[in-house]
Image (spheres, rainbow, N blue to C red):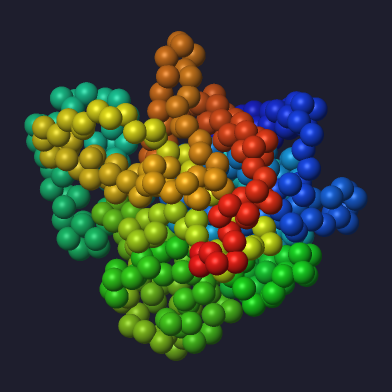
Length: 419
């Protein structure tokens, strides 16, 4: 069943129309790169985009980008980690043939047809582990405590799988699903060759250098203990970059340790003759080394356009976590690892806050109560998904109302600025 049974883009279009009727908005206030769209004849502005790994909260990112595009902005360079890397690659694929295109329309439609829970493909035991340690889903610990023989065996079998493969889910369904989406969006194969085609088109449209990075997907090379910037760093691992499929790079970027099996170099290199490194090099989730690549496109001095970051993140509650057993401990490890560095952008870096769309992932339920959407809450209702999408859109419109590129560069990106 479709996850978006609504016209989500139409809902955002209504919000944007109201915004444009209320605010004297000009894309030239957001970016120096403005061009006339050859199809519509309207002036649009190009910006760079950075997205973190936030799981299902990427729906809010999609809503934010949708509002930006409908308001007249287009994407130039795109970067992301984990879930953000997925979004970055999807936006890139959607723009391969036309850099002026509004990409969220087709991306939202495709994502709406995905049952995200179905991507957990390690069988009943892995689904159980996901429910208990990752999602929690508001269920009592007593209901999930490993007290029964069946539950105990599930943990034992998961431990056996982890010992052999380092992850309880193969990730095959994710690979197949994303590969289909990329092929449809790019109208054919989506490899490094198509990314270069995208870069050439954007470079021509914006009069930018063609040899720069127009798509970045962050992963972690666990074998060498370092951050990897794909596809830029592929030359360290393979001889011929052109035939490397982007789906393998995205699959590496979202490989949450223990939950999904890591990706080995030989799995996406094409064949062994293309290897420059050991085929058993392991890649896992980019969130381990750089969950929010906000500074990845920064240059010395004044940039031509801003890098806008979109961050759906919890506001710190100030309440300590209750850690009474191994399940509480596991959840706290996952939560801290996935949110700590994101929060530092909000709390410690005024420069980053100035160019960031911060989305509160708290949504209102039908009964009047609220719910803070977690990164792995794949069980959201269609109505809750729509609310999260709209929260992202509204946060983007608030940002567009206040942001001024000239003021931003004067305060933070002077000629002596090394970032």
